[in-house]
Image (tube, rainbow, N blue to C red):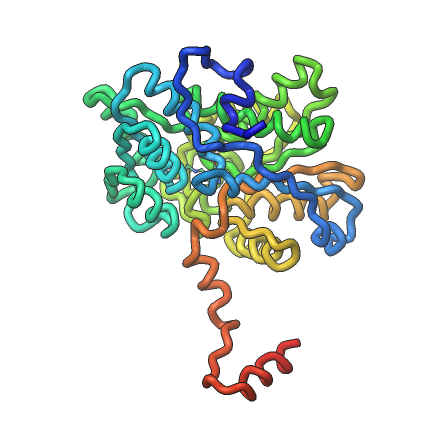
Length: 354
Ligand code: F0G
């Protein structure tokens, strides 16, 4: 049967009925890839799976939530949606609004969103409002303006977003036959970690799984309010997707941590970029910097034994590497070889680099 998106696939578990017009781009059903080379380099006996959410239609997990949020906005008669974004939400909002034939307004922090995401929001025809401020400023403004203009908020404070995103946990359980022991995610607003926990609990309660994972949330060191235990006013990290200091799902995520016996931790930008490169070079999987935070954290916790040997670990890679070409290229620019167009120079370049 033709796959037509996650709402159709999980219709009975989502707030739609037979009259709801579905706004879908075939999102969900992303690959769960078992790492073959990295576990050996860690010298530990662990099974690590990558949930490659970068393979959603707009290149990030946001599509799972956006198909639900835009479907419900259209059902309610909205003609326009709005979001604040570090980039991926704006790309997804722009695309799903285009699909639905409605308008998207996106508030982005000036100069702080990756090039691919900006290109997406622009080409899909969103109205782009650049603010001299960060994501947290944008989020505050979106909440304020929604009372003064006819726009539906599609940030993850919209409960339909989390409903859509919980389906990633369903897919993982269906593929593994049960929930993993640990599920590691990058955390910004903490909507996604909260949505996954909802999904795991739902399948557990319905006896579709006999276990639930410990949920582990990793943040960038310069934007780690969950690790500090307090909001951060001037978040900073190269992983611009998670450059957030005032997470919207603060309470929800703390509940996830305590209910699942998981934890929060942080990684430096250097550790994040190293994990991104390791994954591309050793496994052939390209994700954006923020996404690599989950693997960077998992690797560290596996090495220290906090995640014990024998564990089954899922790391979500939230966004595709092509979202942020600048950061990728700037990490590798010195490795390029420049030659004259003659065979001998090509040959030397090969022989010197075997
Ligand atoms: N990874 C990526 C690639 C993201 O874009 C985001 C969030 C996260 C992780 C964190 O997810 O907020 O649910 O904890 N990006 C939002 C945006 C903020 O505007 O695109 P979270």
